[in-house]
Image 1 (cartoon, rainbow, N blue to C red):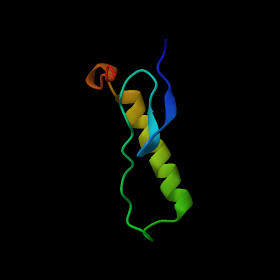
Image 2 (image 1 turned 45 degrees about the vertical axis):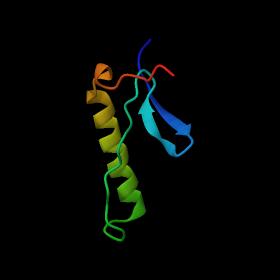
Image 3 (image 1 turned 60 degrees about the vertical axis):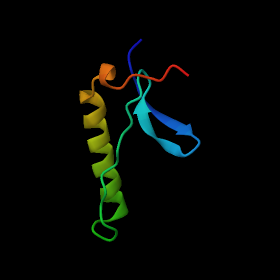
Image 4 (image 1 turned 30 degrees about the vertical axis):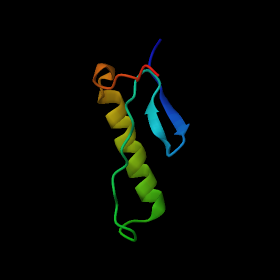
Length: 65
């Protein structure tokens, strides 16, 4: 089954991750007021998609529990 970028919500965690492994996107920190919200969102989406495409699932094994 091909991996997909998916929204993950668990207690204490909400964010984008891989459907096939435990990889999670780490959003870049942008200082408040540095750029408009729309530009920040576009930058995060581009970086997230690039990181998702390049990650290797075997480096992020899912836990057995």
